[in-house]
Length: 412
Ligand SMILES: Nc1ncnc2c1ncn2[C@@H]1O[C@H](COP(=O)(O)OP(=O)(O)O)[C@@H](O)[C@H]1O
Ligand SMILES: [Mg+2]
Image 1 (cartoon, rainbow, N blue to C red):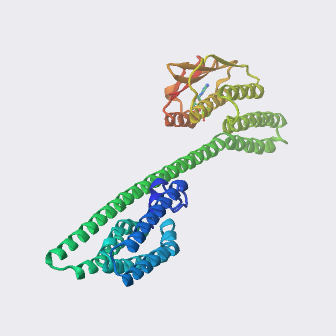
Image 2: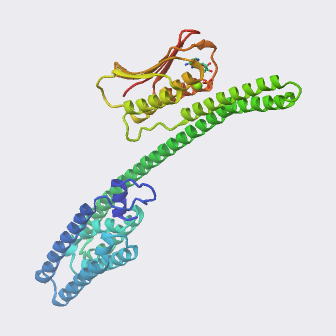
């Protein structure tokens, strides 16, 4: 991974199949590469001028100019493309030429070694990891040192040459390794964030899946507890009626009447189950509209008068989607219970907002029940779903006193 990919991975965390090498800011990167080209051209021109007017022999001057020419061609053909994109072969080819040219330049004209300030950063733009960066930096330093060492008149000169080459090399290595490390750390952090996000999405999907399974299980239980039992009774009654038909037609007629009754109950149950599991239509309706729809369908199907009262709702921040769904489900469950158990003569659905909390309240004037003794999956399941969004369910009822169910959500 070259510097560009590493930079890109930092700026743009890898996401869904992306290997992280797509640059976020293509323009920013292009400007950087252009800057490198411009600086390279300027420094190179300065080197050419120095070679032409500097204090060197004529034969050497020609070799210097040819070497600088080779450097320029290598940069144009291999170096520049390798800096701009992922071209490892060209990068190595250019680095080989670079080291060779610096050997020649340093041998013939140590005054041109200011070019190292250009070459060292180029190395770090071309390598894919810190280790090759160090190797190429050392090679470059050694190649540039051979000339000055050979030309050194005495030990002091040699020491001076060693010192300046060593300082330049160490400085370049320190900077290159430091930048690489920072980039690597940022890349790891970006990867970690990406992983966390993926895990969160997976958890959410698992949670949804669990919800769907729970819902399915509830449906199966409802069918078993209500419809299947009704049909079992019908089968038994029909068998008895058939057996009594000849001997006791009056008793058989009673059985038939019972069959009709049980079948009617089952039909009502089937409708109740369908109503309880009908998807709540919130897609393009507001919560109030969806509740009104639910109530009017309930009224049509049961013949019971339902009043939807939104007077206490008032204005407030919008509810979260999951909160709205939970409120609707609560109303649906409560209405299903009214239809099944209450024998009520009227129902009120009330929406209210108190201290930021939004509640749906379903009250009937039916037979009521002992809340502490009641067993059933419907209200318990509702409680679980409401608690998941941080809300609560209150059921208040007593035999003969009607029932009211209140579902509250925090209302963000
Ligand atoms: N509105 C109501 N009126 C009378 N009884 C009710 C009402 N709501 C619930 N109940 C009683 O509470 C029990 C538990 O209700 P629920 O948890 O919804 O289970 P299910 O409806 O499947 O029986 C019911 O079986 C019923 O006896
Ligand atoms: Mg129920």
